Image (cartoon, rainbow, N blue to C red; front, side, top):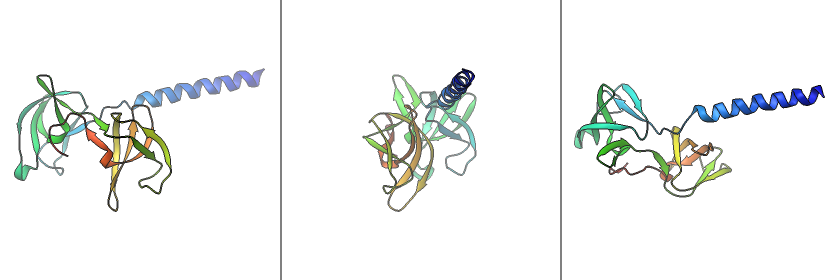
Length: 163
């Protein structure tokens, strides 16, 4: 009898920890707000997907398609392809799968498939690694699937600019 209650207690604690861990990393698909128009400039803030930003101007040429924006008291720059129109506003576009995506245990097709994500599923990119021919991104999907997806299968939903 004591063993049963002990086992149930451990199961309850594990369930609480799992549900906390699952909710601890919501799908926000953030973009970095930088102090200048380039990846070498310091990050001022991370702006979550769906957040309204005030666009001051967007640039091409030497600034490599960066937009100057205002967000929560900060003036800075974000990559243009991370923005999308939303009604009369401009938001940070969420990252979604653009096709059926195999989730792999490691970064490459030689790794086993551990899950499949449907087209249009929101994901957070944890990090990306370049490889021969392809870039692979370690992602966490809205259904809590975690693993590697070919970066060609990811896009910013609704973005007007090419990535």
